Image 1 (tube, rainbow, N blue to C red):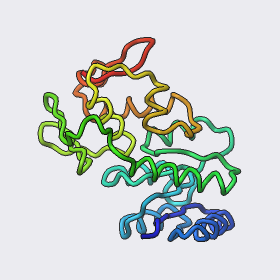
Image 2 (image 1 turned 120 degrees about the vertical axis):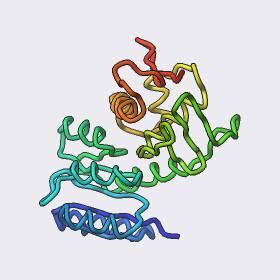
Image 3 (image 1 turned 180 degrees about the vertical axis):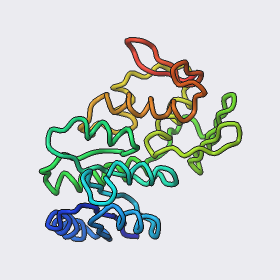
Length: 228
């Protein structure tokens, strides 16, 4: 089946150019030009990935990302202003999987889309075929990619789940931020280790009773993170 993409931007020429190029690669493309239209289409359709501009009428890209993350882990790539690091960090805080800085090359856009989809459908580690992992009140089901705290389901983004799965599969193994970035996001990911820190912080906020004194994901100061 064709990859289904939603492109959201209020600049119609940008949307038209992206949509044309993605269709040339056989993808199915929907478009939206403001936050309200974007939310309506996301609720009514199932997309494989969403390209989402930060600055939009009605609802900003951050607001859309936050709303969507309440019920879906669909991969989201934020389109941010050139050199605006705060937009990139906020995008990750609100649950985006990646970001692309404007102006961008359409070849980069397509490469990022394919890289995210490839990683999200990649093979599980061969050394451990167990699909359910439990620790205290925390349980994850790797087949359904669902997460529970005390039998209450919580919603994780795709990358948050990838992180917790990797750490729970290898308890007490300390992963450097570079290791986590390369393993979860891939060696071709152009971001830096702040991406890992943001996702770990968001993950702790969702699974820990007190994120400042975590019981699941621990920090090895000067080294990295590990699950205990």
